View (tube, rainbow, N blue to C red):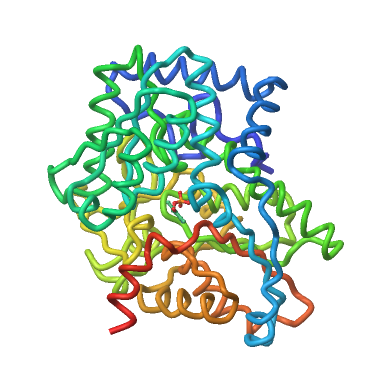
Length: 398
Ligand SMILES: *Cc1c(COP(=O)(O)O)cnc(C)c1O
């Protein structure tokens, strides 16, 4: 039996996945980061400082909310929503940003950089940098900057410099390349706050640990409410941070099934989706070995999703391993299914979800009616939909 909680190994491997695939100039910095992180992991003072800002600044714990009308309408499993959308800045991303900036401050760093796709991680990073009084630079694809003008303005008001990246597709992948280039040059003064359970070791482990508070709380809350564990956990999967955060504390509970939901875009055809487990293969991208969407020559394929936060060619390495082991299964929802779920949750529960989150809701709409009425689902409501309202209005309110 593999002890799932002992992963990754000391070199960052989750079975055949993960590792440190970076330029040599970054190895020292990553080793330092790993060593410093290992120190704070068990450090009571650090952990209580983090718990304090999560509570006072970010708004934890988040409620586990029974979606009564949705449950009744679907006529099957009882549906609970883990309300990460209620956190400061509107999504789970602040959990990781707060953890990493406390670590950066410990290491004496004076400058923070990050990449962002939809802008949610950029906003979370700019927010924690403002709170800490540190210089902050956010790399963002020029195409994404146009699509997410509101978040660009938020980052600027928070005092961050937003740098437009025009290379290639001018989206997230190119923004990550630029951030890595900056880090190589300024590694002494600078900490790179990576935004998902991706990239080189120690990021997949560290980001997961900073989000496990989601699952720790949910486990305690469902036991209080129902006096038993849920039958099914559901979360959307971009890089895989909100999902691994919810799932991780339940990994040993063999009766709890888990489903990660990827972006099916227009359907599973080359270039039309971002579902890495549908036609993806083993490869290396931006620091880690994992499942990704590439052609026969290893060239990264174009991806598409209605939600910018799920639109990335690689999935976090721990997910690839947990899928191999059969512990987590993965499905996908298409753009249309996600948009329908966006409408449904808004109308039935009075909660407008992020388009990323809507993929998880879409899966619940499919499976809940087939489950017995005494079964329990917990779905991670990873973020609120305010940022997506203009885009959804264009698509849905014509
Ligand atoms: C960024 C984002 C995601 C996708 O990222 P993960 O690392 O897979 O969680 C999902 N939901 C929301 C609201 C996001 O902002």
